[in-house]
Length: 417
Image (cartoon, rainbow, N blue to C red; front, top):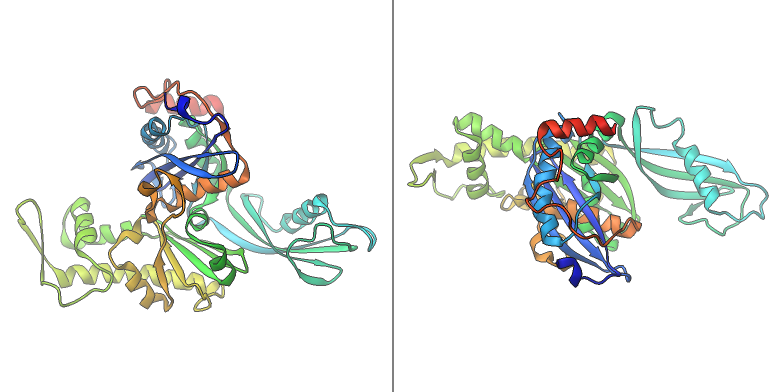
């Protein structure tokens, strides 16, 4: 019914953020002018993921399948393709160079030349067991003249390229594609979470001057650094906000659910010692914990996480070299006053990043934890991977019509691959 009210010229894109703790989806419509409107969204608990990569196939597929039902009903669109986030410490960036001869000095550089020099820049420099997720041209040179951003139409005999190649281990990529395929969703492209989040929360000025996005997730923390308008570095740390929850659960000898409540309700990033000495939780405040002890546990883990973030910034030669500072996204960015702690730990300006400037039901996804899913949808729209309007034939009960149970999912996996 909802589709009948839609403009026939609209097409749809889906961003699917598959995390260790949660899965999130954003469905957006794109009109013929390229304007994006959020028409559906949802989030749900993940399963079968460990440190950002699939630990089994049926768990993530089932979580995606369940979560997409409500998003599809809201958007009136049956998702069959999506841009999908990829995480894990095997996601890295490698700076490479390539050079080709293109002919005489009168030869005008064309798209074929760019493809050739990109192939040279990648070939032999990325191991065979890694999938190339993206190749970001940083600079071109013609006959020794560097600093060229776009050489199309220029003349020269020798074309050189300096690039940033983003890659991940092939098994991780293939297994992630299999999990989405088992939920009847084809992963058209895999994009690192921090890169997708950056698309949703950064503007061109920030990217030009120098900025880093830190996607503070549940089990991993992704980093994407931009300067001169280009993606300069990508890295992932295998720790996240869930480590804080687990530390509290162990030290206080409580359930993780209670530890999460303490973390989100009572802890602030300024660690203000003037607060009351007791933290009381439970229906009748029947459990009490010493605030100082709780804060010591949280601060110790945050110290470790942000020390690792700073190591990544130093390794990329961008520590204290980012005029636009750090933008925090992800579920971990919801911790109260986390930017206060991060500013001191990283010795840089820090802000919380949320998607802005979208139409439709955008208010619901203008949150740091939805930055990756929104960014994936935006990238899909700009890439032109648009699906036409479809009538909704499934999801009457919120489940796929066939093979939706764990055994059906596994059977479907092996029938497709």
